[in-house]
Length: 270
Image (cartoon, rainbow, N blue to C red):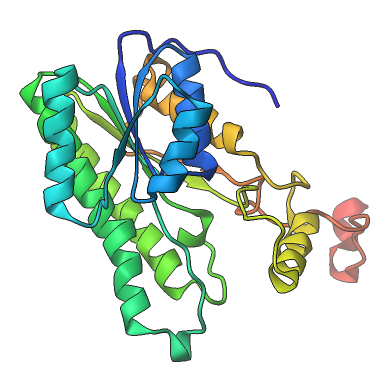
């Protein structure tokens, strides 16, 4: 897969949800571009794997739902690095359950991670950027599920839609500080655990033929978008949502030939 070329030399980049998947990939991408990277996750073992793959990164085990842990994180960044240039709020959870039996406790935890966690991280990053007079970038993560409904995604989809709304407000309020806030909206990205359970495998495979680009996306393709939004190449963008979904929100892959058979419109061709 092609990779974009960026230069983040002398910039401090914070990435949450860095223990696996897109977050782990982004750690490597930003390091390769010269950034000082702080990788954050609540999964200590996963973070250790990220560190093994990317020895130059700094890791912090943080539960972004807990305000005291988030405050300690930004205190550490301020003391250790002095400032923060980029905050990428990638951490999220996406359990699927039927609406009629969706456990309230799971709903609350989804919103705690996806919404409260993103709020706390955005607030902490913005305050540190303000304190250090840094015109930084914040990139929040949504999902195509915020726009396109899907069975079982009652908490996940609605929490992702909330992030898009929150990010617009953050972009407005932080504009006077020179801080840009944008959102990435991934679609089907190949980050699932392997081997997949049979039902999950069948469900994912059934989605591929409907995509305009007939494959799942790769983590580095999403990472490239995050790097673009974190760079000066996107200097005139704030409050934007960048969709990386293989065209799934545009429509479905065409099957067969388009033919006009409606006799009502023959006169148009005469």
